Image (cartoon, rainbow, N blue to C red):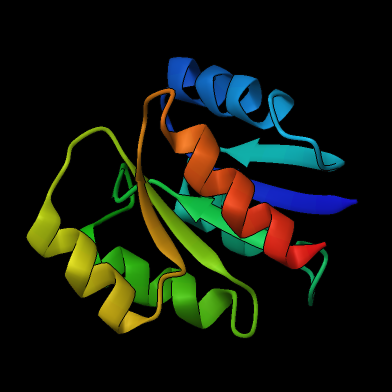
Amino acid sequence: MTRVLLVEDHVTDVLLLRELLSLMDVAWTLEDVPTFAEAAGRWPGGAFDLLVVDLNLPDGQGLELLTRALELAAGVPVVVMSGHQHPGLAAQAVQLGARGYVIKDLEAAEHLHDIVAQLT
């Protein structure tokens, strides 16, 4: 079972990710928190297999937030989930170490499926 921690402050986007994950043919559990501080508090030494983080949170933004997420989840894949397509930012995120950069839409299911399938 793949354990996913989602850091997202918009309820509709949390619901979207839950829906996307429900389309996958892999077993998963999802815990969501609205801030990076809460994610750090719930990251007890490897309890999660995947960290999905929005780069526009109340307590952090952009590549600085991604850097913090990568440090928090050392050794665990981190995926950026964004509401906007930013090819330059996506490339920078992957160069920094993100496993992927997915847009919050139905096509995200395919990208997330590929990432989650690699973990199982």
